[in-house]
View 1 (cartoon, rainbow, N blue to C red):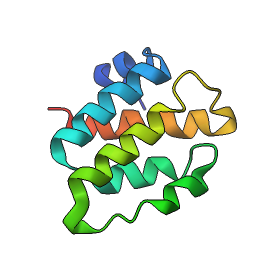
View 2 (view 1 turned 135 degrees about the vertical axis):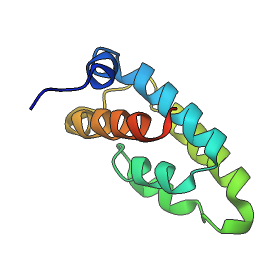
View 3 (view 1 turned 180 degrees about the vertical axis):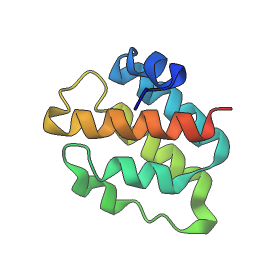
View 4 (view 1 turned 120 degrees about the horizontal axis):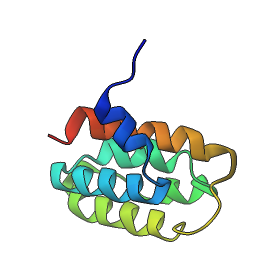
Length: 97
């Protein structure tokens, strides 16, 4: 199976660049589900449980989730990095049009 040119281009990017791009798209789409799926895989993910995710607070919740993930910027994501890279690439391939 041959990988697409879009996949290959994204795979060349750093994890941080992928995160920035995916988060930008998710914030524009108000895609809180994407943020929760990512936060489950970052170190100290139990912190994400403190965000309520209520639909009447989608804007603030996305901003809180985004801010929390930014705290991990520049930190080692350990064994979760390949999973997060795959999640970011998949999200961008599906939603960054």
